[in-house]
Length: 225
Image (cartoon, rainbow, N blue to C red):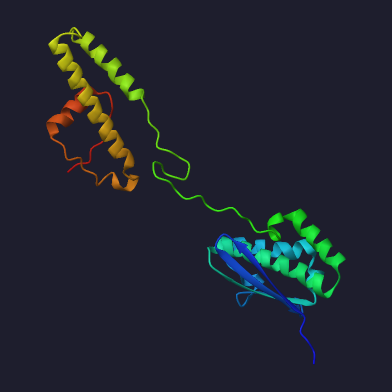
C-alpha cells in the first residue's frame, strides 16, 4: 500500500488564516481552488510569487501546493497565503528530503522577508475616547483668547472708551460675544464636508449676520436660502 507524501502548514496575518497542503505532484500551486496566476487583485498577486521566486521554481517541480484561506481582508489573506506556501516548502523538504536542504530554504526565505516564515504579531490599536485615533488627542488652542483681548483693547481705543468705564466693559462683553459667535460658526463650517456646504443654511437672525459681516474680520460664506 503506497502512502502519499504530504505536509500541512498554516499562515496567519491579523485575522486571516491560510492552510496549505504540500504533496508530491507536478509543481502546481492553487489558491482557493484556482491557479495562482488567476488570483485577484492582480497587484497583490506578485506577493504570492515571492516564496516561489526566492527558492527557485525548480524546488517545486515535483510538489503540488493547495491553499485555502479565510477571514480578514484581501491583503491579509494574501500575506497569510504566501506564509503558508513558504512554510509548506520548508516542512516538505525537512520531512521527505534532508534537514540541510530545509535549513538552506529557511535561510533564503528569512533573508528575503522574515514574515514569510514568522507571523506578524502587530495589531491595530483600538481607538480611545478624547481623540480621533488610538493616540491622537483633541487639541486645545489658546490663541483666540489672546486675539479677543487684543481686539477688545484696540476697539476701545478706537471708540475712545476707557476700559474701566461702564460703557467700556459693556463694549468688551459685546466684542467677546461677537468673537465667540464667529469662532463657533468657524467650528461648524469646518466640520461640514465640501459636498454639503452648498446645502448648509445657517439659521440665525439676519441682524446678527450683518453685525458679523460688518466687523470684516473673518469672511463667512452663507448659502442662499
